Length: 163
Ligand SMILES: [Fe+2]
Image 1 (cartoon, rainbow, N blue to C red):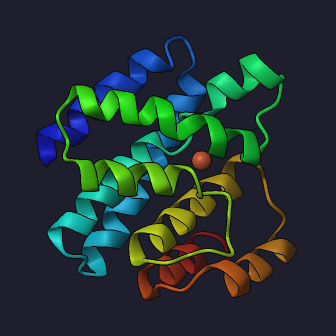
Image 2: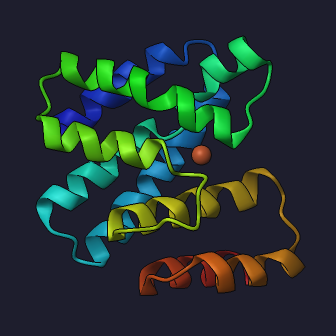
């Protein structure tokens, strides 16, 4: 899968051409997700799904901004999966893999429907980056931890970074 993630990273860099902020965002989310997944001992298939979903998770943002002039989470969740599916089909990922990646992309702002470790880690990795990028106050970070962090490694990263 190593080269597959690099292929998707390459594809996403051209998708977000001239938008280094978005590229920096997904590279950081990818990196946290990859490490949490490995340290939490995910099986290979789940790890691969998590890594590809982390790279592509915000793919819907570009169309949301063009179409609705908004980057609100719900628009991203609607617009993201179809573009991601098209991209993944081009690289011959199998159907089941694509379905799960698209599901994660389509739900990564929905915190009430977490149904798997890949989903949980994606949420945690996105928070680890967003807390820094959005300058979330330390008083709020404790409540993010209580509400949204479940994995041992994710909690460790969050605590060592921000608490
Ligand atoms: Fe994100």
